[in-house]
Length: 412
Image (cartoon, rainbow, N blue to C red; front, side, top):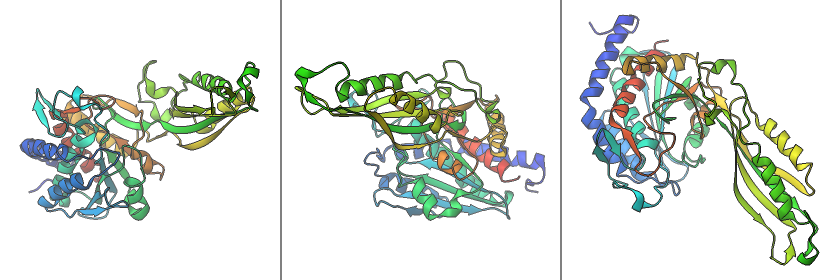
């Protein structure tokens, strides 16, 4: 008799059976990583035509339909759906296909667009962020589809474009055109580093700081008479906001952070500065763009109040918002988080470490719609870079954990 979803022992028997299938598929998984790395998808320009074709071909080769949807013809995303044995929750499995720029190619010790398998690592551009997760989640999804009679509800697999620059042509476009894609829960393959489980991510606030002055010939300048020195004071005072901390909310009590953890402090980075028109003239206008990253507990309004307080003390200083969104999270006691945490324990044999992601991810798009979402994947460090890689065993384990977590969530 096949394992029963209603029986805990039957569900665990099925999970172990799927674990074994993932182990059997290791070489297939590595080969898929190789094909994904060989399909360049640097953003910008964000061309995912080749890599989306690799994913679609893999899914179709395993008997799944795969639709290619695009707002921009060079940025297609892959969408595939599978129904379970009856009504139940809708789980979305999400990965992104685009990668960061490789930087100076001469600094790489391995080929950028050819996977190198060495010392337990899989090297190649995007392996950490996040083609390792693309491969692991693709395998997990096809196995779950094969055993669809053992779980309830629906799974939608999305492999999206335009995530690395948080553009509007990937997940944002899918959610706008396919409202049902919000679902009841999202597992995003965006790893926060070191196989931690990210239940939250910092908010983003971009402000333009500006200063103005009357101008005149530089020979008549006095202290603070130009827009540039006024802006310099403004920028310096805003820079002092770095390190602002606050307590985490009660539903994030399981997130353990150290005093040095950047995820629980405000960061403020001045990215660009412009000002003045000529060296012998007192500057009349100057601007700077500042990127704030907000931990849970510090709101955009809190930061803007502080910036307004600073501006009020500087002649001619003012500011405007470029864009922003609040820090967002899913409580650690959420059924979705419990499902993935339980899967992690079974596969890795240890307790998961909860984390707050520093950059934004597509998970925030689902949380903004009130949908529980988390990030977990095989990225080995805080951020990908030169000699980007993922640990081979982490990729394999992620496929098992995604599969187990989905089975648990879809049996609730």
